Image 1 (cartoon, rainbow, N blue to C red):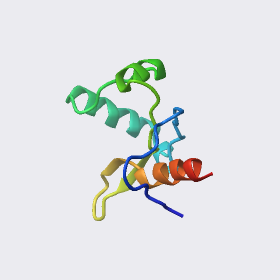
Image 2 (image 1 turned 180 degrees about the horizontal axis):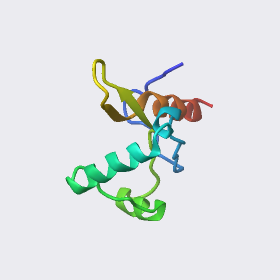
Image 3 (image 1 turned 90 degrees about the horizontal axis):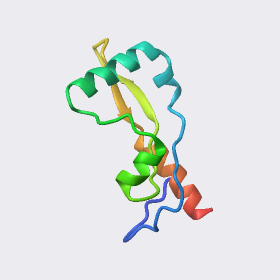
Length: 96
């Protein structure tokens, strides 16, 4: 069950880096090529070590898993951060 926090959310007290969803692992070469193209175009920064990310974010951070979404009528895949999965995990940790 998804529960959104209202107001100021509690501080992040631990780093959370989930595994990517299974669709992101179906074609690792496609994923690698896609990420390299985005890096070359200046759309992505990194990759960063966890310690470097702690410095960038000023402490702990939480990630959302990557997923591929197939565009209807196309063979192109779209890479997304599956925010709902991340929020469900975060809210369960906060509520639990």
